Image 1: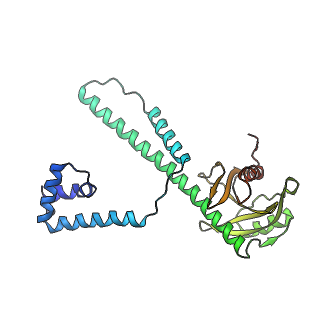
Image 2: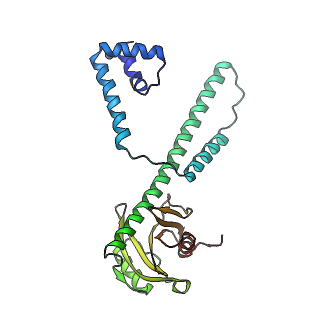
Image 3: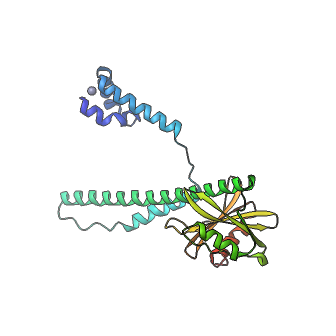
Length: 258
Ligand SMILES: [Zn+2]
């Protein structure tokens, strides 16, 4: 085992992924080579740091389901192999196809996870903003139940114009609005009162990653999301999740009965 071979395998060795015979040879080389030993120590240190410092996210069942669906879709998209002209060609084309499928899968999986994380991050940021606003005295910056007052106030401070509706006749009374900064961008927040619950609705232009998702709970608050009118709508409240979900779909102009 020389330095080049050792350094190629040192990360796998640190992860306990090389067979016993190779492990023995690598170990023997490391004990006699300062350079490779330093490389090995730095790999160990990095893996310890990753374990200690990176947050661990448990994937929710919905993500599990989407990853499984992605795997199924990729399997279905790989065409049957053409009849090989020779064994060597079969081996080659099989390898290339497997490589393509693996790349497509990695890309689709990556996109799924990134989209999920982006949505998750936005929901967590929205809940944090809701908590900050309700605990501080920052709940409302423009106090009005008049949508014709709230909308221009927000539009003047943003590069988009969020639709504002008062749904008092459905139990959701508009009490005002404010600006929040979520993911380093100003976002329109509409504030409603439903019975004794404050409902914050964060409205921003729709992004390709935004999606309607089942209502769920983030840090003890219910979060419901909808898209419509080219906007991404996210409601946060301690009001009941079914009520919140119907409300946010109504604001987005979705048909709640669908
Ligand atoms: Zn060496």
